Image 1 (cartoon, rainbow, N blue to C red):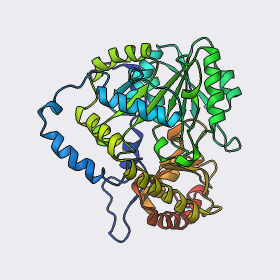
Image 2 (cartoon, rainbow, N blue to C red):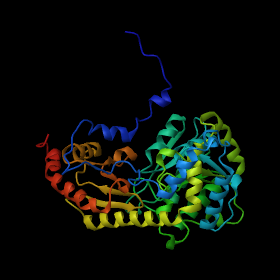
Image 3 (cartoon, rainbow, N blue to C red):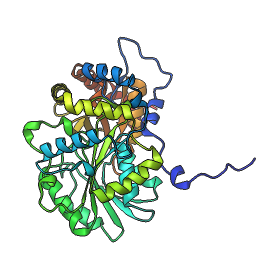
Image 4 (tube, one colour):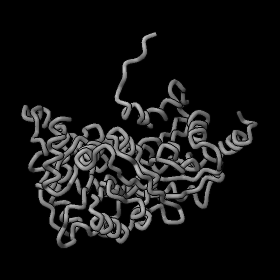
Length: 405
């Protein structure tokens, strides 16, 4: 037999897509109408874009210009509109020249880290981490330095622990807030401390705020980094239009950074995609200009889902309890310590029609957790989730004891 031809070992060593793996657990299985599969696996809105946006896009398709390339850094009007929105939200100046529009937030992260780090450098990721961030760094040959967070610490990073991980090869500290997978919101004071630490060490602070639009506006700005005097280029800000305007398939996100770094990312963007999808950029611009009311309604809807889940879970259901909750996500501690989280999640999916993700997909030390994403289910489904956790507990206990295999 001929040996297989080699591939890049950095790519071969990265995990396969986790969502696809989870869906593989239920592939080919039927679910009766009276007991449908409950999918809390992937954070994709289960509602379509606003009617006004869909009507607008129907006309945009007829515009021949939409089929052409957009400028590499993005449509000028969209960059300016996003800069204004950020300045209003954060209370500090943001220039259009600091914005690059990307094909989704995953690409924004890829562009930023390709511009910042080379093989042999290291980047600090709080654990649990967003698994795509880790996979991108592995494929770039960048060392991932885990920064464990704990329930006792509110599932937010400890700046002192972050400082202890930094050395001369550290290029960035990454923070996702509201967090995926835990839903936790990092307090503004902690964000400021982490940013200050990075500034003092000459390290970029990569802040991913994909889910910021689901925070209560009455709570004020998520942080004051843009309002600080003498901004030094430490901050690299990531954003997505996918969740706020329900545009996941249109692939449109953004990265904001000092203009010199944006210029480097433009080089990469030109090689990877030339530009983000033109139609997605037009959709995002329409959303920023016309859909504040619709976004407020969706924010309230998602908050209702979080509240409904909190209510049905109470202090715990059959030993499952909430470790983190907010925005799009719940992070549950399961009651079967010592049992691989994949085994628990697979059994819930295959035997009880409840598809979630195991904590082990989100980094080391997460075997006792499961992630639930609320984007796919209405508030009325939350009692059924609790019921399936409860009804499955006895069989899962049997699995742990060995009698249920």
